[in-house]
Structure formats: structure tokens, C-alpha cells
Image (tube, rainbow over all chains, first blue to last red; front, side, top):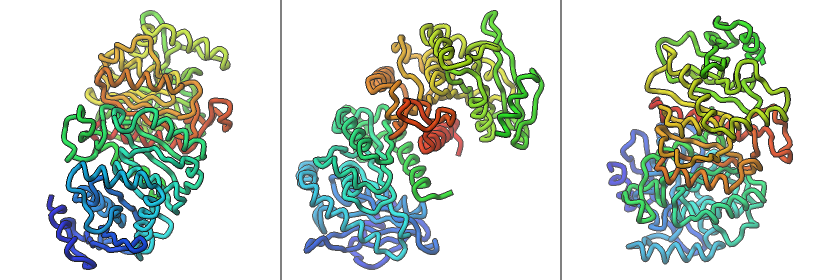
Length: 264
Length: 264
């Protein structure tokens, strides 16, 4: 929790780097724009490392840019990447509960062009950063963020690969899969009631038809939100933390990055 | 190919250890029995390592115990495991072509009790070996061998985990999944025409219903036999080598072993 407490304070230290728990880890609350709309994301990297490095965009769940997703960005920074946690909703726009989160996420799910513009705005911040290796850029996302990074790929963004963790897989524009430049990895809870087998089948068919380089992992006994401890422990609710699936999926992402970033 | 040439000769050096290509790698053609039937498997380990170590049973494709599967056993030995490549068909019984392979494999697929007895006989050889860690034993199999290691698990064998590479997933005795003691990983070509979506769904349902700890990976653009270079390069034939899926699935197996053998 040390990281979370430290990084929360960064929201109020805009543009100034702040040391967080890990030796050398530096974070920044970074403002950026999509047209006239101001967003505030979270940038983090290990200052003890020299030179540029692969960059990873991280997209939040429906609850918006919160300590959970910042913690994921911190984990990526500890792995040696520069991580930028996007803010899809806009500065200060944070759902107060699940009801509001559903409304906010629903707006972007219903308007994929807007969603693509928003996520590309965040991706541009990462791309422009001096520490980001211009040839090694990925994006990961959780739930709503999983859906979002798939749309980033479908938008034709110059990304080495994207990873969806328990994300919704459907899109109103499946034909855009032909624009996908990088590799695609989808990590799915086999019992996820929000991402049903027919949605999984349609997604795999979409990837297949477009000739995308993709693979897909189904975790047994896992439901929605399986990576997030805040989802609780009752799979009957449809969303729950699953430690095994969390650890396996994180290792899977690491192996995927090793492949797409050609790390030995 | 150096390994293959060296290990082929082992068939004629029964019971005597033979050094193969890798420094310290030692192999043995090992006879064992299932009732009155004599089998001849292939044991290999790194002699440069001290003490016991996790043991991995390797089960062949429908073509029987051939250089391909011995090469896989060699790869496992290089990773530090003791590997035993089973001989399901019996000593000297090697299909001369695909037609005969279909007949041989078909006999065991139609008689799962016999298949389970045969694979357990091989598993016993591995278990009894002094170099095998008594608490760390896994089994992997390719195609027919994937089907076979799943039956090994369903038989209630005391195995830490099993991995199926492009194996048939169906069983006439799905209720026996309740006997499964270890973890299950199935690695599947998303376009495999021999293991269709409904078979995948039935398998996942079987695992789920029995409360097995399992996960499942589908590799895009991969068909049957995706790990075997001898399958050629034409996916339209239904079986073909796929280098990406081969490498990804091998890394997946390594991560799975790391987890089940609790290697740091």
C-alpha cells in the first residue's frame, strides 16, 4: 500500500516528479489534451535505469484512473518499462460508484470513435516521451481498459502488442481488425458472465479473419475482474479476485512482452 | 539433429547410458512392462546436475516413440528435469505410415482403460526412478499423447500437472475428471480441424464441473501438430508446424512447470 499512498499524493504535484516506494521509481501526474478536453494520466518509470526503454500504456477499469491501475503502472516500471496510465474520462472525472462507472464507461463503449481518439491521445503522450523506445510500445488494459486497448489496436495505432485482462471483446467495427499492426493477447476468465462464449468466439473469428497474430488464454474458475483484489472473493457475484489467474496472467503478459520487445 | 542421431543409437544400447549432444545429458532405452506386454521407453537427464529433480513423462504422437518426441525429452533434460518418453504401443511396434498410426492410436482411443493402464505403467517407471523428486511429477503429450496425459490425470495418477499440446480433448468418461489431482494446461491450435470448438467447450465444461485447476491457451493461426516441424508448413492440410505457436507453447509449459514445481 506504500506505493498507493505515495502515488495518490502525486495527483496534487502536477508536473513534478515524485519518488515512490521502489528505489529509483519516479512518478508524475501528467496533464494532456484530446481537443479541448483535459486529461490527467499517471507516468512512472525507474529513474535508476539509463536510456530509453519499452513503453507500456495502461488503461483503467470502468472506475477510472485509480490506485489499482496506478499500482499496475508501478509494477511495470519495476520491470524496467516506462508506464503511462491513461485517463480516458478526463481530469477530475471519477465515478463515485458502480452505477456512475457504468454510465461513464457506457458512453465510451457506445462511441468507439471517441474511445479511440481518447486512447490515442494518451498513447501519444507515451510515444512522445524521451524515455520511450520508439520501436517498442505496448498497451494493456483491465475490463473497460481491455476493450479500450483492443480499440487502440483496431484504430491502427503503431503498437507492438496489446494485452486485454478480462476485457470486453466485442466491437461494432470488427472489420477494423485489418488495421491491427501489433500482436494481440487476450486473457479471459472462463466463467466471466460479462464476456460470454459467443463473444469470445466472435472475437477469435474477427482476429482470424483479419490475419492478426493473436493468442487467447482462458483461466478456469475465474470470473470478471480476476486481477483486482478489490473485486472481492465471491465468484457468484460475477466479478471476483482470483489469485492464481492474477499471477498466471501477469506472467503471461511478461512472456508476451519478452517476445514482442525481443528481450532475451 | 545431432541429438536425434545420437539418441537413435540408444535404441540398440538397451540399459546402458549413452551421452548425447548436450554436455552431461545421458539417455537410456528402458524396457518396462504392462502385464506381459513389453514396452521400451526413453529416459534422459542431465548427469552434471546433483540430486533428485522434477520428473516429466512425455507421451508421443500417433506415430509412436520417435526422434521427435525423444528430442522433446532431451529438451526437458536440458531444463534440469528427468524426462521419460513413454512407449504406449509396445516394444518394436512402430507405425510405418499415417494409416497404421491411425489404427494404432485408434485402438487406444477406443479403449481408454487400456490407455490409462499403459500410460500409468510408464508413469510408474518415472516415479520409481531414484532421481525423480517424489513430490514433483508432471506429464506432457503431443496430439495422441495429449489425449493420453489427460487420461493419466483422469485416472487419478499422483501427478503435479499435465500439459496437452494439440491433443484431442474428448473422453468417454468425463465424470472421471473428479479424480484429477494435479493442474491441467491445454495448448490448442485455434484452427485445429481435428479438435473442434464443441470439443473444446465440452472439455472446459468437464474441467469446470469437476473443480479442476486448469487453464487453456488457443493459438491464433495454428492448426493440428503446430509444434512438430515434420508436419510441414501448409495449414490447409489441417496439420502444420507453426513456429510462433511452438515457441509460445513451450514457454507456456515452462511457466506452468515453474508454478507447479514451485521453482523461483
